[in-house]
Image (tube, rainbow, N blue to C red; front, side, top):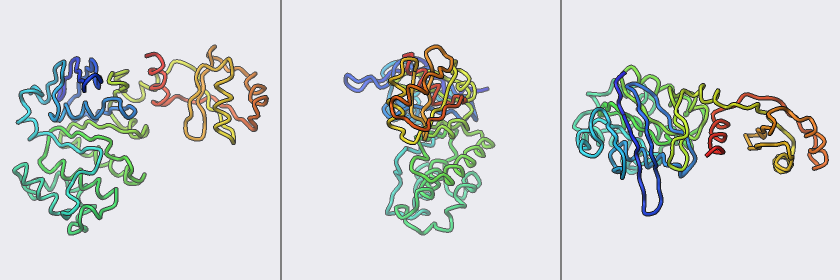
Length: 303
């Protein structure tokens, strides 16, 4: 398949702080490619390089066949960017925002209406409402419509569903999947692991370096140890008790439970007596399947 993005040894510094280091990856046409990592990992810096808003200090990146340093004028006409924070004009209406962005890119809403119909139809009944008065989910749909109105070949989404309710998040991803039929390549970052599983491939990034690139299910399979889920009524006391047990290798909180691995990679039933001594009551321990978060934490520990 055609490579929409090819990045080789990308590096970027801000003063003495290295935001990206030796980042290499490629993304194919019509692929949904996700970047997963904590705040400060380098995702937004990388996205700003992809969208030609920043230049890399090191390495080379080509986007749709053009160099990100010299081809930025043509690239900006063919990239849609939705930043993490709502950045449309709050004092313009829904309709006015969309028309403004269409005009900026030399097109009209009518010309590309078919592309945004599935998204914009949800908010079109409110087209006279000021953008600043929209709900979180409606702001998200308007921002995506504006990012798509010029029919870009590449769509870059920086944590687009943060702070949006679960139903709106689910609807949003259904819309993204439908964009495949228009041969639009999507690069997205997300803090939600259920969304990461919907990507074709994901890259795990930490401290400006890529730890792994693979299909989400294969990244889960890369976790090479037995994993156990531990629950108890007092979670804080449980974490401290688990981490003080000599046979525990790792113990990380996951929702209502704590995921643990053992140094010998086998369950040690003496942990029950240890938890009793530490005042942890009604503890339950079951073997569980690793998720992307578990693989990410495992890779971080190896760094």
